[in-house]
Structure formats: structure tokens, C-alpha cells
Image (cartoon, rainbow, N blue to C red; front, side, top):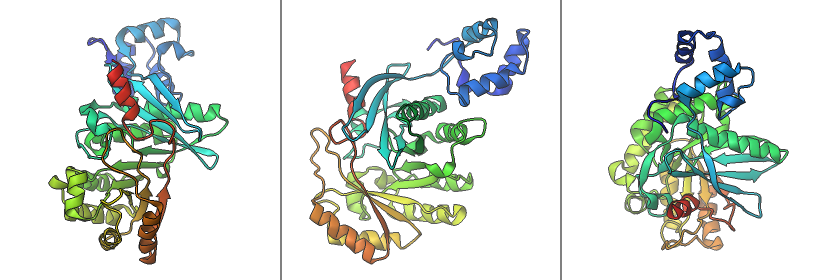
Length: 349
């Protein structure tokens, strides 16, 4: 990215209008440009066909797009497609298009790498590179929508469960969601979007204060302090009690029922006693529980929980009147776990 050029998706419509009028152009063109960027999802000025060629050349001399380039694509037999995207600075992120019920969900990344270092996650081995811009997040959604349409279907849901911790890129994630949900953007419903966090209490409170309308998921993985701290170092900074208080605040202010993501790991967090501790923790606020099958990561010491043990775990939670869903692993015949494909792309550099 050249230093003298600004990212067109990082400036306001008013700033574009000011630039155009300073060059003798019509101010109304700024609204047209905004529509091309955020409604039609274009990645170059040449695609803005209702602008005069002279205007497009003027824009190209002043601004750039922070667009993505598909570097590696893997397709599974179940229709799951994983893409490693190369960013303008050579870093990599991933998105995953997931089929289900004649519609598609896209799992998007919010950061290149991650600084939280969860022990079961392939992304953590990459280290933290940088936050993604709103445009880079937005592009993952646009690409997924276009691919779903090619398959004669539609994109119905967006989950921020890819690489990175969304709440540690708070402003850019919310700006991307604004463009995805706005009438002059992609006009998707906020109720179709889920932001997943490892549990940053002050940011969860901020979400409530900002009156967000999208869904919240929390990667819990254990309701035992010691086990969760081993799995997720973030728990050493923000205890389960602190997390619970922030969720009480969030549910009380927004009325949104969060979801706990719980990755069942054999012999670590899948015992009946673990289920009892989890049920007790969940009684503090309205919540749903997603039980996740573990996708093996190269050189990882973890194994997925056996079906029998998983069923015992779930039956106990259901006996406590908990809302429990099983999120079955998709794309088992490709690099399905988050971070694996980007890891390979990085090693290729």
C-alpha cells in the first residue's frame, strides 16, 4: 500500500465530497461512490461505471482499496469452502463458507493472527500481526455472498468466529457490522450476525452500552477456573466471576441471550462433574450452550470427546433445562480448524 494514498473505505462520504469539489467535480458523486463501495462491494474504481472516466482516474490517483486476494481455497465434500486471503501487506486471514438448510453461513476473521494464545487453537501459533480494517472484514462477507449466489443459494448468517478476538478490534468490527447491516450497505439483519469473544468483560459491557442488536457468543470451554485458565490464558486476567458479572450486565441491558461455545476435549472438560459445574455457572443469566466437536490440529495434545461421554454430558445439561445444541464439525476432509490454512500460507512465503 503506497503511503501517499488514502484507503477509500477509511474516509467519510463528506471527505470524498470535499475532495471532489476541490478538483472541480460534482459533490453528488460522493454518494454514488459510497453506493459502489458499500452496497455493490466493488474493489476498484474502474467498476464504478456510472462515473466519468476522468473522475475514476482522479480517484485512482488519490485513493486505494484495502482489498483481499484469494491465495488458497479448499473445498470439502460436504460443501464447506475455506479460503486463505492474502492482505495487501502479505499477512493472511481465513474465512469459511458453511452450508446448511439450503442457505450458507460465513465465518469471518477480525484480526491477522491472535494475541490470546488459547492452547487448542491453531491461530494462536501464528502470533498477532494486526487488526483488520472494516473493509477487509466487509470483503470476506461480500465474497461469501457472491459464492453462495453462484451456488444458487444465499448467505443468511455471519459469525465472527474466525481468526482473532473481535472485541480487541472493537471499533473496526462494529464499523464493519454497521456497513453490513445498514440500508445503504448490504442491508443484512443484525439478528443474523454473531460476534464470538473469548470473554473481555469491559468490552462486553461496552457492547451493552452501545446497544448492539447482533448476537453474542462467548468461548467458555470450562466453568472451572483452573481448567479454563490452562486452556485460555485470558481467564488469568479476567476470571469467570468477572465474566459472569459482565454477562449479567449485557443481558440485563440488551435482552439478548448469549451463547456459550463449549469445545469438548477428552479427559479435560467433558466429565459429568464438568457438566454440573457448567450448569451451575449458567444459572446466573439466560444462556444457550453450543457443544462443539474438536477439529484436530497438527501436533496438538487434545482429542475430541468420545460420543458416549459427549451424550452423557449433554443429557445432564438438558436435565437441568438448559438449551443445548451440538455444533458438528464441518469440512473434516480439509484444514478445518481455524488458522490451519493461513498457517500453511504463511509457511509458503
